[in-house]
Image (cartoon, rainbow, N blue to C red; front, side, top):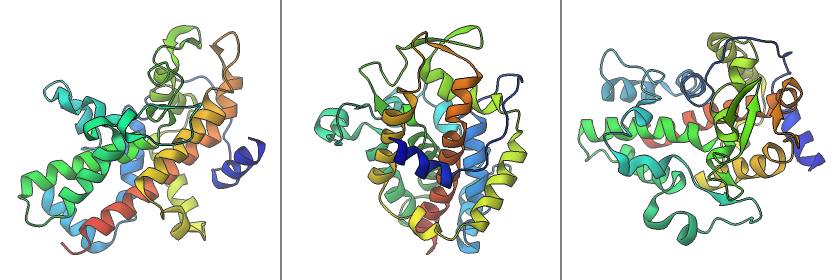
Length: 268
């Protein structure tokens, strides 16, 4: 576990001291926007042209990054596509158990990448696929959307977060990013700067969607659950421990989303 954390630490941004601030969203809203904005700054000119063609004139990758959440009530069948509950006591992805009928984020992301890249599909079909892909890459990099301890990805783990009753999944879905006191714009600038300075982008963006999901699984297994205090009262000590890892998930999500879109759209 120590080696795992040291590896993540070298890949993350320098930690910024936490301080009180208004609650913000992580993967709920701002996290998705950050990942989309970082990706938008890294895609090739040809990919950018196709994205612009698929989206409406008043839309951007960031503005549509939460579309998949917004349509869940009208399309309830899409609900299971946002996560995959892999038990943390297991180390294997067993689709016949956790992704039946392709109803999980791993299968859904692969499915919509293929739809997006198929130029025989209509513009509207590909536009929806683009929105799903942008969102699902973000979801896949949220550890509690992958790892599970028999508690629905932390939804059944009741915790107190800065004096408020909530659950572990919600803490990772909302609150952690806002607790840093760093704005969306500042986060995007820092992540873009870090990616420009890295020399291992090819390795970082290699692998399959399954590889990326299992990486999030390892974070949930080795960080999210083990770092929980027995009291289940989360304070700045917990936030300090997970902040660099949380930032690393954003960085990887943005870089990988750009790579996914370039591979799917580079030929129009």
